[in-house]
Amino acid sequence: MRLHRNLVFAVVDTLDQIFNEGKYADKEISKTLKKDARWGSRDRGFIAETTYDIVRWKRLYEEIAEVKAPYSRANLFRLFTVWATLKGIEIPDWKQFEDTPTRRIKGKFDEFSKIRKLKNSIPDWLDDLGKEELGEKWDAEIEALNEEAPVILRVNTLKTDKKTLQKKLERENEISTKFLEDYPDALQLLSRADVFKTNSFKDGFFEVQDASSQKVAKATKVKPGMRAIDTCAGAGGKTLHLAAIMENKGQVIALDIYPNKLKELKRRAKRAGAHNIETRHIENTKVIKKLHANADVVMIDAPCSGLGVLRRNPDAKWKLQPEFLDEIRKTQKEILHSYSKMVKKGGILVYATCSILPSENEKQVEKFLGSDEGKDFELQKEESILVSETGHDGFYLARMKRLS
Image 1: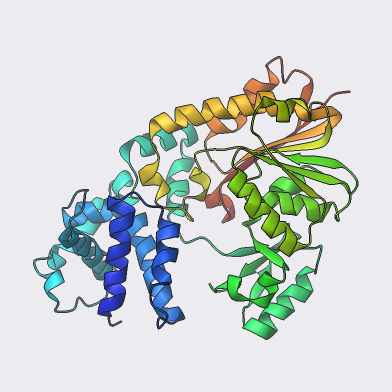
Image 2: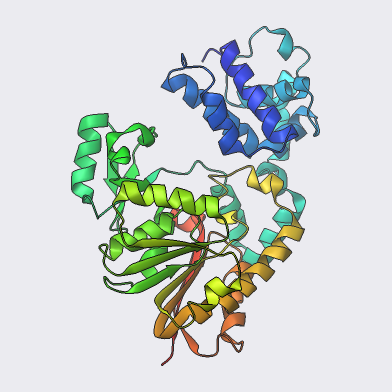
């Protein structure tokens, strides 16, 4: 493989923004890919995949390269050198690559691969926490979280079906997919492709949504004609799934504290042909109180550490801090206690996170069920999804019924 100067510089410039300026990897990569219209799909793929790779293995690479943050431009090129050498790519004779420890890289890689926190490129505190909460499962899980995540689509059943969409993507875009057993609305891409440029996406025939995430709306057992509330709707991936399951009958109320996300949800709902969604901005506690004992189904996709989706957001492990985890657990508790009041008698409450930590998941539900607010609920179903066991994103969900 021959390295091209403009692509390598694009990677280094993007890494500078992510590592030194604290920018989010997905947003910076997206911004970089728009800078040169001459770049083809292979060029864009190189920039995105290489940047994500170096972000993912930052700690391992910096130990090998003997550099520390904040990174000078020379040190960013040293990180790139480690990546290229370990990939078996010949380093070009550029001045930026002078004085790089190419010969020692493979030896150091072998040495550091014996130390879990370096081998898997994670902060000390996160390695300690994972071992504490997941025990023997942590080794396999952190390895799985460093692998590339598959691209999975959720077929929008308001507009099409799985077989029809599969044929359409193959015929019009040469995108091959496969069905996933036990995931009725899912199609997994056999190789990566820019699905957002397809007419099928523009026409609202699918959303990109991991298989684990698709389980959450299904777990509510919502039916057409019901009133469902998505309490932490965000941009609406699971809200749209609820609307599709309900066949546009009944009502889905999408709540969120961020009005800009609800604006995006409205745009997505229009594309998806989901007409039974109403958005409400949580400006104050009155918004919640008006809905007390009002819903057949309440879904809480709670804010969390996001450790179950590190494959998709590898920079999160460098931004995450122990103090944030303490705060997010308090927030989860408050949300469960407050939002559960919107479930009417006989109704269903689903609590979910994209975390793999029991302290954010089953322990939160256990505490809730033992509280005054949770004493009228009974646990019907609980599922902890690990990447190492399923190949899909790490998730947790619990379905509880309010007794009548």
